[in-house]
Image (cartoon, rainbow, N blue to C red):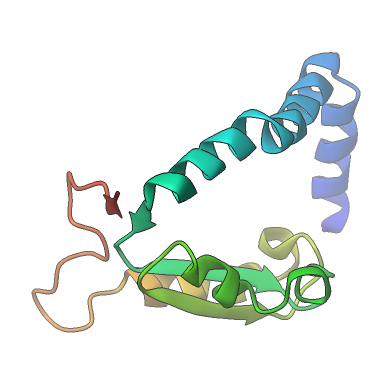
Length: 126
């Protein structure tokens, strides 16, 4: 991650407000977010715009859950993406590969194409 990023992380985790926010994010993932996910599944909600899924190849995501694209295909109609050769912190450890994947995803396929999800549209059906 580099010294600058590690220094920033060290400063952040010494701030009780930052630590509380980090813990609240994890808590929400196990409670409120989970309830919302279950309600969306029960309602048949789907993501209808192209969905980019990127993940670290040197983390345990695939070992724990299999192909991340397969997980998202249960939710989304058009799933694209690939693993990136990095550890857990993709943005810090492989910024060029991440930026390239994002630029490719958001680039129009041909002149005059619309962006992946229509402006003003939610990209969600349900």
